[in-house]
Length: 247
Image (tube, rainbow, N blue to C red; front, side, top):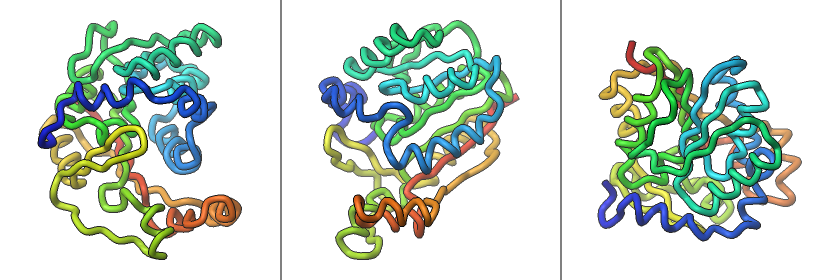
């Protein structure tokens, strides 16, 4: 566990996230998720029709709604008050059949049986004691089920900010585990080997590891409004993994 942090304290940071910030994620996340993360997650998940999928740490629920739009049977789990409430309100409005459950991933309630797939996008790096959360994601799968997760790439977590400031990427510490202070809540750095070794310890078989880069034409179009976005073409800001649970 990250020194001096508990999962409960990390969750409390997110309880009061402004509604405007949550609404800005509609309908398919921010720029990076829209162009770099979502396409890879959906490709890795494949055909979702009739499949039972857990969106583990679903936040405001935008990806749950994308999954439901692809005819998956979706359960979304989210511990924070503000984002859970927003996700629940959107389901009441849209009636997509998504079941939202307010719970900590490290202590899941009965979710109604095994899942064909679990997606955990940009969540593990926000949890201080993250290993029980990954274990829970794997344990709710059918044998051979698909576990897909994304995190900020541990080698390039502050890519855009440092590129904008220096015209290149700079990293001073990689091997240690440490807090990364963000606008609304903290993330936690740990090396790639931590995530992959935990997958191995859980008996999972790694199917694919992706480090997506931004399309140069998209970057050129966005560069005027977001100087430094070209860094996403040159270096990967995200690490996305797909693994199969033990048979």
